[in-house]
Amino acid sequence: MPFNVSARLPTRDQVRARGSSDVERRFMTAVYRWMTLGLALTALVAYSVASSEEALNLVVGNRFVFFGLIICEFGLVIAISAAANRLSAATAGGLFLLYSALNGATLAVVLLLYTGSSVALAFFTTAGTFGAMSVYGTVTRRDLTSWGSFLMMGLIGVVIASVVNVFLRSGAMSFVISCAAVVVFTGLAAYDTQKLRALARAGGGAAAMPVNGALALYLDFVNLFLALLRLFGRRR
Image (cartoon, rainbow, N blue to C red; front, side, top):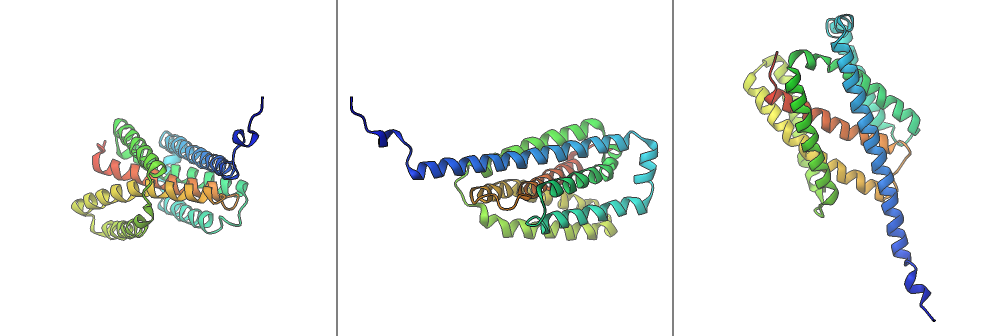
């Protein structure tokens, strides 16, 4: 019985689309794997430091150590982001995990300031919000590129206002900053997800790019969590 072989075989475009989909899936799986690992390490270190009086005295009780850790964190973020095209996946991953651990040490103070139920509620609210926006960034056909400039301006505004409020210590200003941060980092969750998927479809870039993408989403998640905690958290 004769049959058309070509009708049963995928076309060249179908093969390319399938290959592109596989590359995107592997890339994003690596991104979310690194992000989850970083968040888990941050939580573990934060809990460990908060549970140890000696560690608390070293990290929180010593300003030089505390601010030294924060400076190191900024340096690591800059290093991972700026050198992503030159770093190996292993080196970038090691730097990211080091950053996650240091961030956990400095975030231990959060567990001291807020009740456990407040921290848990803020975490699950963040997880739900981040997950929903990440899905939106994945499935929407709308190009979110136009969000970039708006979100970047908002982020710069939040950073500047936060620095100013360190000296003013205004409760009203802190509330406004936290509300703005929620909007900015909620939007960034969708924007960064779509941008990473576009990068994956283009081939994924350098070997360290999944780690760089994980860092971006990690920062979106953590900053959204902190903003929600400042807005709705109950202090001890």
